[in-house]
Image 1: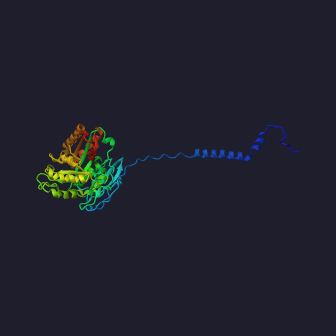
Image 2: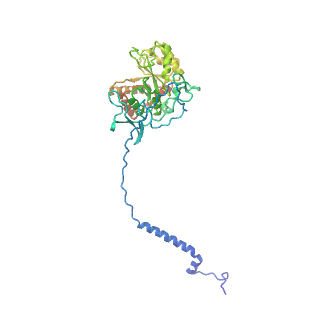
Length: 420
């Protein structure tokens, strides 16, 4: 008779019985897992160690030469360029220079932007700007803060005319000099630190010097193009792509005119009616400029009757005016107050043809005026000596001084009486 498990007394099972009750499949699976792990560890232990790999130091890539392209065609003065919204332009890394010059390419080396310029036109005397590299190549180290400004012209701030695109005040009262100015942080603009603005003038005459000024000087440095310069519209666009606000220089009658002639379209004290036509033709040569700078004008700037109509045109166009300090008896600052045009006058001017020590001494003089008066405007004429001294001087200024370097337009935005 079979044993009834319900009525069988409780007892301890032997190990054989316990193994049978737990079930054979689970035991077999557990054993297989253990065997697999043991085999894996054994295989890994028997593998040979990998041979050490030699360490190869990275070598910097050689500079890539520029890609020559056909020169860009000058835009007609009677056309209005494409109107841009108030948005920064894309930085392409390649910008046009003067007419007939190749485009240039940039590369990065050690965190610094490098400009490779092939076959730059030589300056007078046979020396090219920026020094020469191997194979006749000129290598210009670019400033690290050249962030592009918004494209120009901006919508609502330009009008088409027979003289070309002209600036105008927007319907909301916004003036072109305010729209095209390089921005300055409020913490800097309204701080108690002295303000120093630098304006480089006489650009656009020599391609090499223009490249050096635009690419090697900080973006806070403002630029001004001479009326004799070629391709002013392209140069103005290039300046803005590289972060510089810019001005147009307006030739004005000096003593001894016409034997001493500052250029075509010179404003004259004996032709007040014709000055408006000449001024509008000058203003139509570029777009996106902050304002105008007097060029020569030792006689014209003392003639109030001839100067007042010019100031009214500049007011209507919403422009900032800079008196470069050439004319000691200039009436421009006083007439600016009467007409309602913002006018800045240079505190120190560095003329061309100086020795390095002389140029540096004038820069230090402007720095001292900024410390004493709260602000100063330094105007520097673009020649090889002045630009190199300015580059070195500005580099040391950031290391040793508390004076804030600001664009020229920032001085016109300071509260009335600030620093004066």
